[in-house]
Length: 155
Image (tube, rainbow, N blue to C red; front, side, top):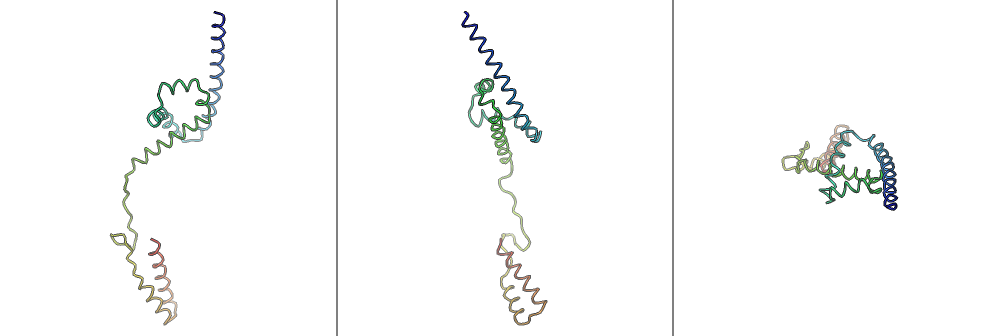
């Protein structure tokens, strides 16, 4: 009977020590979440258990039991890890809501088939005109043709 009382007293002492340490770890983790957006923290806190159960197959009851007894799971670094993992899964779920195919943007100088409408002969002609008659107007035409040629080749 005396040993049972000693064992019970040790268990209570260990539980009290663990609860004090867990409170310190929770406070350290809460300090991390202070700099995070409030909506994100709320969403992650609401989804962390479901994420661990659905994505990783962890039993909800075992998770609760480990949360209240395992120093590793309750430590601030692992709490941050669970936060980041849950945030990743929430972001991935958000990405799945985005339409798979976004509409294509038609740039100026492109037709409906998304092929450049630029004709390379314009550069050749502008270069010949400039070589035959080097003046400011022909130089400007050649420069514009050269820029159009470069832009068409970058697509």
